[in-house]
Length: 169
Image 1: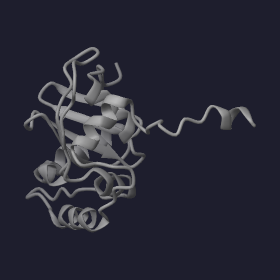
Image 2 (image 1 turned 90 degrees about the horizontal axis):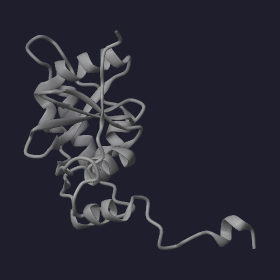
Image 3 (image 1 turned 45 degrees about the horizontal axis):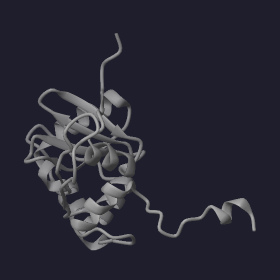
């Protein structure tokens, strides 16, 4: 038997055990996919224009994240590793009126940004870029949560310290 096959563990999960448990308790399961709801959110975001003319970007990475995690309210189990874990609510319309904020962050990062939801009780807004990287925006600044949604969920739900985005000196 090849070494790779011998090391396969059918009980392995996509996420660390605690993150997986928190997601499942919120209603997530492997294969969860509500594209109809994701398309509704995409249309609502595309149709919204701020009084100053700013619009939301909608792209595949955002729609895929909404389809898999949209509507979930996830709370963490256990203490954080470096900081307190945070609860998450996946609802991109919570960022509906932040089109300029997301546009400005996207411009600074040379990408496009779309809303994902909120941390805590609205203390921060979650966003995703066209490459699938995830960010948090709060009153203290902008934070990099991970290279993809899986890494961001692990950062937030295990209490890992995110990286603060800074301007070049």
